[in-house]
Length: 111
Length: 110
Image 1 (cartoon, rainbow over the protein chains, first blue to last red):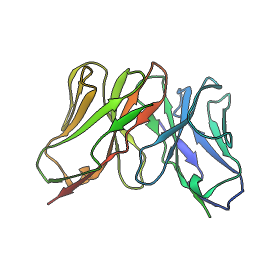
Image 2 (spheres, each protein chain N blue to C red):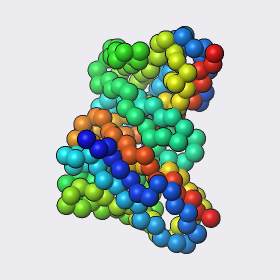
Image 3 (cartoon, each protein chain N blue to C red):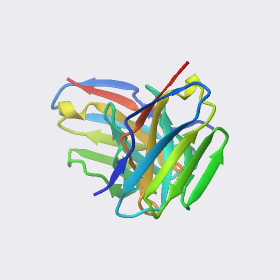
Image 4 (cartoon, rainbow over the protein chains, first blue to last red):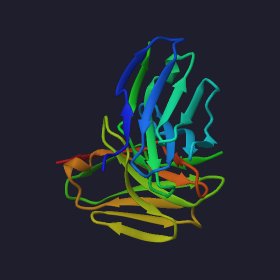
């Protein structure tokens, strides 16, 4: 079975721009979570979706939004990019259990 | 608030045993997980403890004491490939995502 996939792998954007990151969960997994990982820190929770509904939201500004599609894939959108948004964005899927399966991440650089 | 404390760096010799501690203070607690992350890679699941005691999976073991809000990851017979960052993470309720610590960077030296 394919693991969690994310696209793109790397992205360079300018301050003020908008970005959309994509994630496809493991087949059969209905829960998708998004995390932001700044260099040298642990992943920080942004959003969780389950069966297309938002289940949780971390302490991030409204510039961050997400959605989940009927096939359980998900998009994370970030508007009005700031330099501080530069990070590795991780998507994780799960069968609603304790084990989360992470994708390779999207490395976002904001200049 | 939620906080997880773990050492920032640990160095150990190849073939030795190393223990990485984690103390947590969270609003709820369902279980403690450990993840490994190599540079440039994604976190990968190592172990999970919901109840007190020791869980063993090959060279890796994980321990939990709920009364002490404390756990540790034990790595035995260290190999160079074990050099990575190790994160403890707490699930605060049944279906919530994980709250991660800042990670411990393990360096295995010859």
